[in-house]
Length: 526
Image 1 (tube, helix red, strand yellow):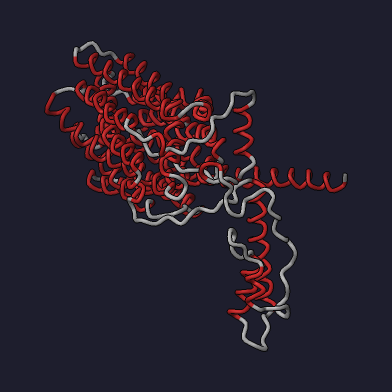
Image 2 (cartoon, helix red, strand yellow; image 1 turned 90 degrees about the horizontal axis):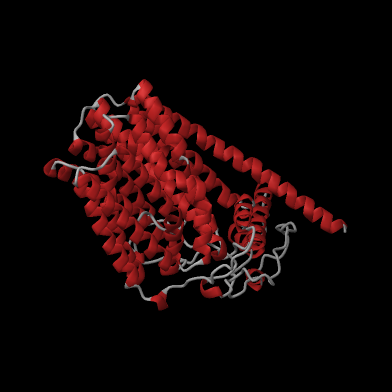
């Protein structure tokens, strides 16, 4: 299991009830210029524009601002009037776009502290099972990397191929997994997927313990695990909203990221110690197989009456194309998805780079390698806990986190000493989790319930689908030029990808707006 989901914003609230201010029958905001300061500034006029469900409109708010800032007998200067008109236009345009795109539902105020989502019975079971399973998963991931290096005499290319095979199915079939998440009950899909993952870990553990494991066995296991993840990941991502509802959505995403990274701290460290003590990687696979019992138990004990599941989407042709068009027409979805696409192209290989740097550059053993992974996870855990206090992420946080991660990738590649390398891994973890959490929250808050599975399928596709390209490429570069060169090139490409995501969003957004204006003009002339 990994970091979880945030509920999308649409024109209808939980249970299908209309959300305040988003009724399709409600009048659209007036786009006329606001009245000049000489117009009526009576506060009662502003209150007349307010409704119990929506609160004061942008005109009323501006009048209230005028009353508060303009002294009797005085008028605003031309600069203040121009600034007021710009604010009014932006507010009216934003509100109109929200109505037109079905995202006018406001995010309810979230209260109750950093761990407020844990008050929910179903989410509490989900989170407990997730922590246990994530620890087992990171123990297996650590053992898998070391097993590949042992079976292939330290081949970085083989390590990159293993990572690529694990994420290749998500690149090929991830969109179909998101479509299944929209069609079928998510809890049932999760129980099936988690059971299959447990059987796969048990099989691989028995092969390693009995001494029959070969490197191609690891390849097959990684590929099959990727196939199961095609359904499991988007289903799990979009399931959290059914447990916690909209108001605690951002908090639940951050807590799941915290759970994931807490396990990332504990798992590799424990695995490194146990591998040294037990003299092999096989027991780590068996421990992970046992950890799936916690997840399955939590899912089975949930109260079905407290889940707010949307109606399943009937099977129909063109649903994948519908999901892609939905994202392309929404800049608020497109930017985080494109940014994650470019950043994650080299993010998934960063864990691989930690293994190569620890063993190939600093000569660290299994326990020291586990310490490096844990230091990176400490930063990620801190970033996730900070994110748990936010109600909604900002665009600056999303872009700033991506730029920071690229810079700290370069810094880790330049680190001359192992302690300094470990120190740089902490802010790198903070930056990466800031990007992932902000993007995940933004995408799910902007998605409507009937589209959330497909949107998360696209998100998971770009989040993990770049690994089959980035991991072998950086593995080859690391083998040719050394691990340091591979890590630094990954950082440079992350920075370049961030700029490309911003530019592409602007280009596609302009084309989309031009198309809308063309349709509107044609309708007006008809």
